[in-house]
Length: 512
Ligand code: XMP
Image (cartoon, rainbow, N blue to C red):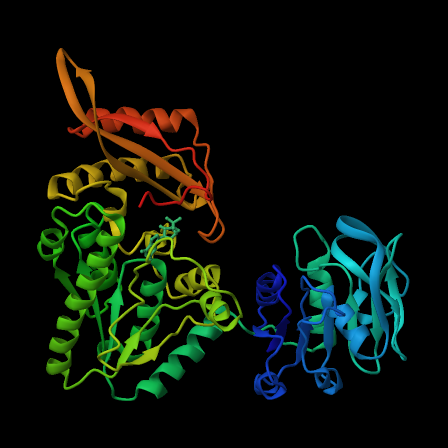
């Protein structure tokens, strides 16, 4: 393992991903973690991330300086460099000239293994306001920019540091530098591959579960499906998956998920059609938060019933599978202030605490793209792995106003056209989410010689990295034209199509 100590940089997760792309496992740990926690990983190397603070700020994030005495190869990046200098007796001060953005670095000492095979001059990305003024004893300068120091090293202590960011795209030769550190200096093997992950995870699950029984709430999305397939690979029929039709799924989705996961992949899948139960609870409700609460609570109730039934049939359920991903794990261990609830999210993660099930979270060390790689390695179909995110409350948050079976059917048809046309244009996997929204706005139209008075559909397509911020996607006019023409011609009940051109913030991705 390469342990990455997080000092609060926006790029910390990126460092972790770059290392993993080299097939070397990396873990992000808050900088305040006790030494014992870091040592528990048996690190072959440590990376100190960048961070927004100055080392001389009173509340500057600090790691235990004993970390620098362990003899484990260490690479400081940006704030990491300043941390090393500051804690080993050098001096850091506010720079006379701040450096943000592109810069050119001259390597002065190409003999250091960190710079192996790099040219004497490098394009890099800088982002710092402080600089190291005096180096601690035993350290020497290895690189500079025209303004400031850019690299230091002390081979005897096995410590290297750079002022620039090798992990970002704007440092084109950054990957070589990270390779030098990970393979050349730390001696990593590069054997953390999808196949290796699947093998060790499957063995670990088998040992953990023994003869126990496991349940899993499937949403049909990437995470819960890959998690279920992994557990199935480990324990086969000891796993029962529950997939609930909440009445607001997409067109044919209830059947498709069953085909994919039960028929093709052989999972033991219980499909519960509870659409009437959900829709009757939703009747007459227009408030977005109320809709979300109803669907969330109803889901828990349905799942609970099933879990108890399965528990009786199998002589007791002990474990629950969840598709938790690494960014959530890092997020919940980092310090942050209270934030306002914009929407009460529901997904298949928030499940009954009353059943006292123990958790299996086979994906909790993985980033989303890694989950897809694992799924591919296990032979899962692309239409599961490449699926765009779909909210837990489903089409309910895309039908404004009251939800009725007729409105659900209208939106299912319109949505199906949007997805089909976006796929046909080869855009589906390039867009974060693309879908239709049903507005309760009625307008006059004409069809043949007939006057129509019908609903409006809005088209939403956005680019995003993580769903936290998003930009609307400029779909080609030709695609918009086909979508619009097909919807108004094929979906009786919608006679007008509009295009949502709002970014997030200030909009949100879903309309409710
Ligand atoms: P918003 O609308 O808040 O959505 O900009 C951000 C991302 O979250 C998805 N979303 C949900 N996902 N349960 C989920 O699992 C929910 O209740 C939920 N609400 C929104 C949304 O599709 C987008 O990707």
